[in-house]
Image (tube, rainbow, N blue to C red; front, side, top):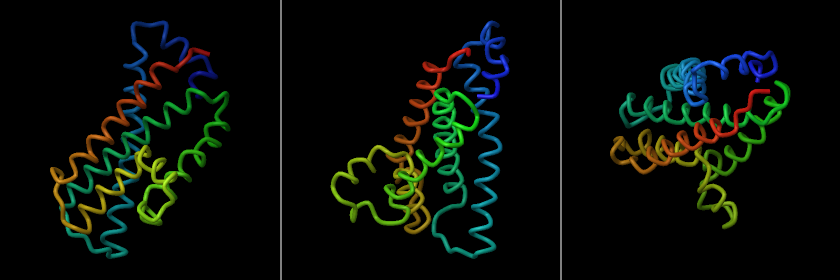
Amino acid sequence: MRERSQGTLERLLSTAVSRSDLLVGYLAGSLLFALIQSIIILLFTLFVVDVEYSGKLWDIIFILLMVTITSVGMGIFVSTFAKNEFQVVQFIPLLLVPQIFLSGVILPTSQLPGYFQGISSVLPLTYANRALRDIMLRGASLSDVSTEIGVLALFAIAMLAAATATVRKT
């Protein structure tokens, strides 16, 4: 958003850099900091709060990487519609709150009304939640949660493609 409002985006898009290259660059830069935050929270949860888990730590980190890529891609996509930075901040609760309540983080999706279960099935956090629960509680491996990983990868690709299609110069 800031690059668009300051004219940097227009200058970047007038070079040989494609829109997708530009967005992959933003994704990589944002991903680094988001992944560091996620790993700090995970390590605090596991080793300071002492939450027990069954699966491999690297499998958990991989799922965190997948959900982080998906979330950053979604953030980039949503920011293409904002007119200013304040609007980007306003979009965050609109994306996060439904996912938190409908993804099974608070209440199992099987206990939701049918129409909410349908909505839940199209939210990326639902698949991340399933994968993390299977790995951390049941000791599942990445191959056991390959469906969830595939869905998260599709979400990430779709969000990046949508952001590429909707990014505008001004």
